[in-house]
Image (cartoon, rainbow over all chains, first blue to last red; front, side, top):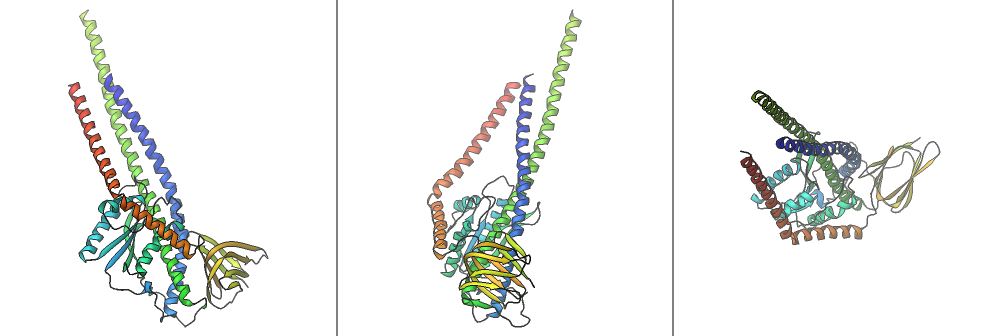
Length: 286
Length: 140
């Protein structure tokens, strides 16, 4: 029964794979929950800054920060957030596909492009297609720190201030639910003014030092926090996508095992029948 | 009389609750905020934000800089997560740029690696197919 043994080893090996994918699925599920918590924890900071900036922009209409003034776009910058590791379904592939489409559009309009990939997969991708990479960050881990992003964001913001780029986009995945994640393009600078805020009666803060300096400081923090949020959200997406991918891998392994078992049982039965008929034939011959 | 205090950073919400008095290390010197203070917006130096709670206890939080926003009934501390200075920011920007240059400079190496990986996958698939064919041929 050589075929039987072969099938048995095959079943064993698929079972081993299934154990791994199941474990990965459960790890991803718990990491996803933690990433979602972090996503929520990061939100109040950005919301608060957004409110203060909106107030400042209204109260000091005579001072226009360059980040708030749109200008004609000749070169575009993009911060692209991806994962560090694979085995997370089509998450990165979908993002890159959307990105390629956008790149083609931009190139069609005659715009120059600078990218800043975050995460190993994006670095590899943009390296391969030969894009202009001006800064990068990777290995941020499951609990990214804002400090690790400051440098990369600063390179892009400096590029804007020095007019090397005229627009800056953040490209990352949005977490819609654990089954769906969608690529998103968000314009970071120039910032779109928030029309929701209206000053009912004119009041203003006391500033220490100047309003201008405080606004500069706040705008930088605001953009950093948006990028940070994009990164944290992308981690939640990564874990969700990995969870789903590993679940379907486990299911497929289960199906494969069932099929193999059927084949194995058939082979076993056939060999028993053959032996029996040989015995019977032998007995009849005597 | 108490005032609502939120201490938040980009990574987490650190404190949220009522306090009688807030002391913060503003750039121009330490400030004490009592309920009903005029709206104020100031930068913070690295230091301690202390809260006097209604129970009489004091709680202290270390902030490495940030922004303090005061409204008559609400105080918000937008704390930085790390010590920030122009030089430090500049250094990390240079680092990020250097990493990018490194990637660009050994681009050929990376492409070779990706190509090698693809070739390897193809060869492995071919090998597997050959083995399967041979097994089928051996059995029949």
